[in-house]
Image 1 (cartoon, rainbow, N blue to C red):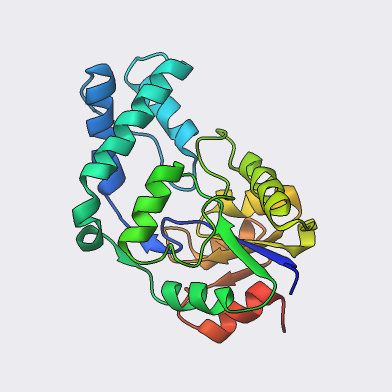
Image 2 (spheres, rainbow, N blue to C red):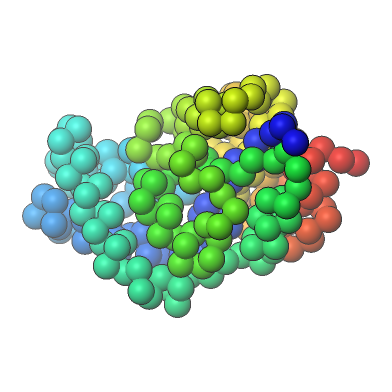
Length: 233
């Protein structure tokens, strides 16, 4: 059956929980890339790696030019790569995530990928460590290296999916799931369906106030998640 629905997932606090690891990785990357000691950090939640990296550099008095950002990313990827063998012990898949991804993968016409603030390499490591990469097409996602604005990632992912699958995905057929207001904003800016998942630090009320069309408490209720994604009553 021809693909007719594009489901784009956030990673952190939507599918997985690696709380606390990112700060350590950034500290290691900053020291290796610039020699500076990591003293403080910006808000990470729902933001892209390009935005976060620029802010980390600026907070430490370093000009966030493209060359330095790229150097930071190489060191960030290296830090996560060194941690690959322990990622499964350091993080966890959120309740229902594996079952939902598998169920939707078995549904005709659905393509699943990502809209994430993470770099592509880090996305793969985080998902593979917990066995969540099998049902996601990671080649067509929107990643945090593309822009400081999360909203810019959506048209990139949609265009990549359309090119690969030879079909159009109108905005109303694109579903974005995430745990922060930034995820909701990105979906609404594109005209996509915005589904909040209240498994991060933002409450269901906050996600509703951000404009989510629907908010799920978590992914544990497979029929409820399936109905939300497919637009069924």
